[in-house]
Length: 197
Length: 347
Image (cartoon, rainbow over all chains, first blue to last red; front, side, top):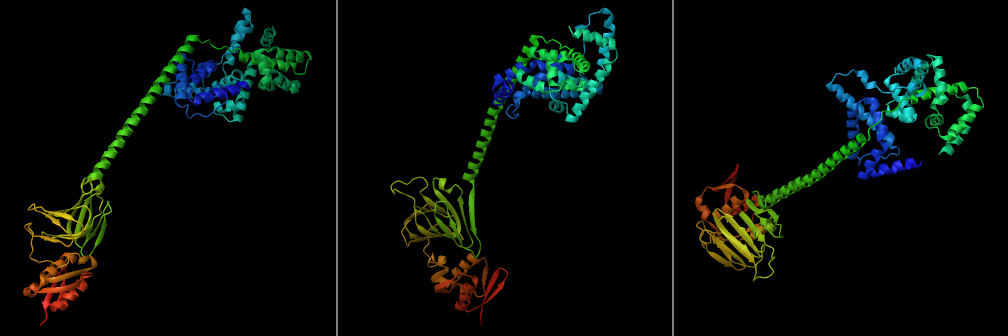
């Protein structure tokens, strides 16, 4: 609760033209923005451009912005739009296959965390590879859901989906994951054991 | 926060949860992600009770671990700092551009406003108002200073729009007008700017402070008849000055000199009441007046008739009344052809 109040307050300071509020907002939200951007663009320079643009625009338009009590969500949403625009612009100049618009980086590195045994390494890699076959949007929704801990309302809005569509996409993503997990029961047990400390 | 969530947690029936339920559950996610002691204790206890869906719980846990096994690429601290510097640099640039824009706007709008003002002042000070009374039409003109001019038919009065702002109140007249000039002079010893009123015709300047007078300028002859007050008349051609008293009449002839041939209408101001008062006035003079006022050309069948002298008052309110009077006095028939009126002797 207190965090939300602070967010609202901090945002109000920005709307009133407080330059320090802009710095504070940047410092508080840099990390989730950076990581989200990197997952969508893989390119640090591009992420830098988009973030730069986002914060400068934020200041330029501070007089006309609407109040919010969830700055991180607001900025992630704005950054996503920025990135989509960036991709569209890039595509104009260089022929990038359209599917790259759907790309989202989410890699599962189970083996490094839980599996140490050399002989299992190979199989574990196969599993990760298979898991990484999830579509960009499936990965993105998993990221927003489990890493950014957004609810379905927020996800739906950020990803331009209906709430129902967001549920569906998430369910399909998790189902795909589960299918992959069935590949090798032995592997599952091994992981389980590892998880159990 | 933890306590509150904990209470909600207790109300949930986790024992009937499916994998999807677990994965959608914020408490479960928090437990896996952050391993808070309260959460760990809760779930340890829950597992110890060996619920029916324990395996499902483990599967969900495994899946979530898998999902969360993705690790963020590390950011260099310098990246964050230098980006913030760049952002602030751009914001500062934007701010100073904004300020320059405002200054430029003030400048340009200021220039535009003063140009507009100059244009208006130029127009206002140069612009001239023209009032014209057509044939058979009288007009009352109210000047900006409160003076009035009764314009006789076929006459034009012009004056500057900035009448009150000029050094002298100046009007130009062709034709005939009866002036009632507002007296605004306070100290006769010292005439201030704008207090002097000048009526100008081709042949004369009539300078007054505040009077009533009739001024007539037709056929290169100028008549000034003073009713009230004091005026100074300057004949432009001769440079002669005349100080007039009420009742005085000055006639300036074609050569600009004063004439006293009496070849004029007797009462200069009777036209205001719609009459001409004639006193040993020739028919030619009366007809000339008629031509001036109504725009006709009058042709006399017998030129000798024109020299006939008449006394009395003739109505000039309408052309019919004037023609009717002439017809009876001169004993002629009247024939109108377009703009020409023929007066023919009755035999």
